[in-house]
Image (tube, rainbow, N blue to C red; front, top):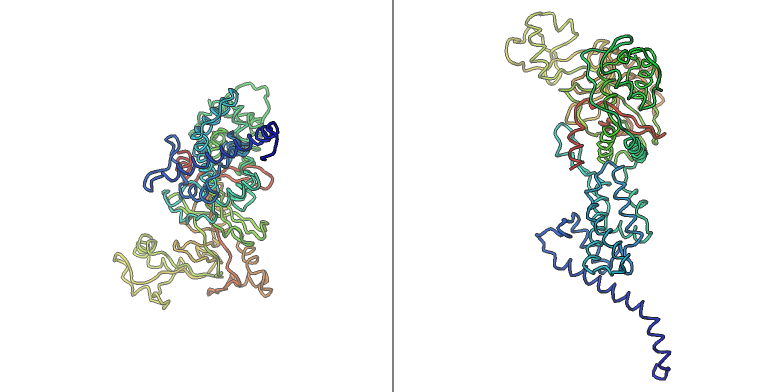
Length: 549
């Protein structure tokens, strides 16, 4: 260099200047980020422009590990990586989440400021560059946490949910490092989705419904009736219902004589609507059909959003090869193996005030020809008054009195006039046993199990919230055969014989099968079709409110 001509030295320095400038600028930005974090007080929220950051610990770890180097800007301007994250934050609405939870409003303000500076050739201030870096990293961490375990803590909800909140198994700083290395936001966030196909399909349904919502100009004021409307009858709500059927493409405009008359053309459209929405396709405009017809696209998006959150709560047992799923809101049991549904059947679930709880356990044994041990409350409130009126009541109901160790007690020696009895009442095995011919046991603190029932006609009803909490199954023999498939000795004939004995027989399964009781009022099938059901226990509103906060 000492002997280099001056003009060549000048040219060399000029060629190095941009790189030196960028290096100096990057170092200045690192120092700015470092100072912001070093000045952070342990008991004071970390904030950017009065916006509190949520992932304070992850922010500190992430930037310390990378020596405070920025992630979201290059040479003092926003990178494409930053724009990709902003886009994905907006897309979180299709996960049923609220994009504003992830600083979207402030991010948009800063982005607009940077874009304006770029047009005017004004350098972005170091403070602003540091702010947007911290803000975007926090948004990534917060969104990632919600996608992995959900936004709402189910333990904070009213009702008997019994859902253990999931704990994060992911290091979000490491996850962001992976995203940075691969320059992929979307693919990285997708690794956090529940490991079930219906989640991604659910996003597609919400996305499509959002497009429908944008075209919606109907009046969705609820149509209410005092009694079921049948063909040929008139009602002032018929014009609105006809428009809704046309909106959902079940009906094309057609000439009619009386706009308030429920005519045969509309009847056929209602039947198609009912079939598509899991309703009895009788064509009658009853309360359940009207409930479904009263839901606007915006209402359906809300319903889907609530259930996307419920899917994020699901336990890791759903990753298993074999499981039993009971969707209480759909009155259905599915037996899955290797993610294929091998068996589906109708079920009866708990009444509104005897709601079936939401929980998971493991099925371990079957009881053929079971006894029904009556709960103390039923003995006190129903059996004792009945015996006082009719001394033959127990015999007529095929019941007996036993000690808690199972020893027979003569009913005539029992004092039925008191408030309680120091014995157990049980119904003996038989066709009229309230548990039917078989019960399927998955021990849990709620004393809930799956069982047969002698009241077979109830399975034809549209509303099947009829039990005291247990799950009654329509086809128990087929279900038993599937669970015992590994033991060739349990033929259909042997199962049938075991279900018609005078004493119960306990059969231990050769493996424990996860049982998950769900409450899904929306799900998407493998074809991407959305399915919406009634909120039979009125649980959606509370989750929606927490999601939208």
